[in-house]
Length: 148
Image (cartoon, rainbow, N blue to C red; front, side, top):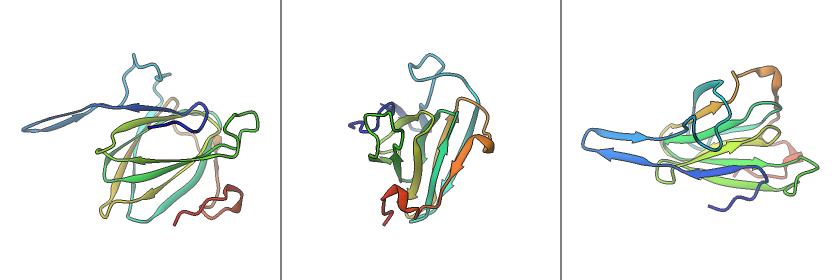
């Protein structure tokens, strides 16, 4: 999977199945992209629903999709970035099981693609803090992106 947005990291992950179920790796303290532990939470999203846009001014995000399928969309409006003004779409699912690490100041959002509810795990490098977040409506024209 090619990376378009500067500073985004996409890492293929292992799923280890056996006759009892499976183990789905996500993030280890000795991984190159691990900074520190802040919080892990799970976000669910329904079919064709959009959860966007949001940006963290301080936190680094680490996303995996453990159930279902979602389209993650990134938008870079950092004026000093080589990818300024660019979008990147990444399909997340257990079939395409990857960890996406998103540094501060990258806009992101999701669209549920699976008929069933999808589940995204997020391991932040700091506890969730609504005061360091910025949110905008999915239809905000400044993103020049159509979720359809």
